[in-house]
Image (cartoon, rainbow, N blue to C red; front, side, top):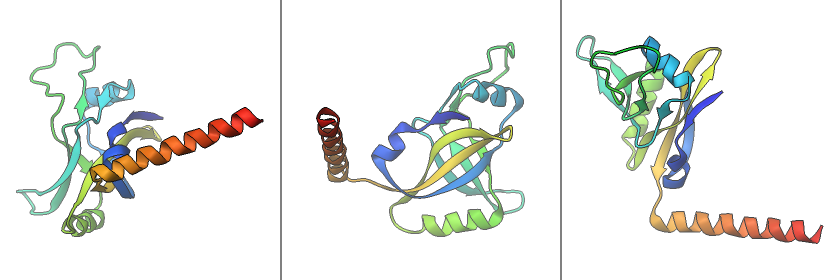
Length: 154
């Protein structure tokens, strides 16, 4: 079941590849996310090295998960805190290699449940230029026009 989608991802970026990752959430965040109280607007993924064991880790930033309304008062809950992505080391190293290419970025596309777990669909993207966006809009409008013509003839 899809919990949230990033509607601007397909508009602002060319998605070259998709990758599934787990999300490390607290208990009340999982309950809130499963009630679809999550927003990916303005969210992105970054890769940092942990200070403890010097291994790379992927983090989801700026994703907003509202507080669970039945949890009572939560001390110092931050809805847009950084959340760790659960990827294996080879996937993270591959992402680091892709990040070195100019113009590539990692954007969350959607959050969904799979076998009771909360998963994130991560897109490896390249930003669109303004003229690319205009071409997409023209293409979409022409497809709609042809569909209208076919409907009116039948």
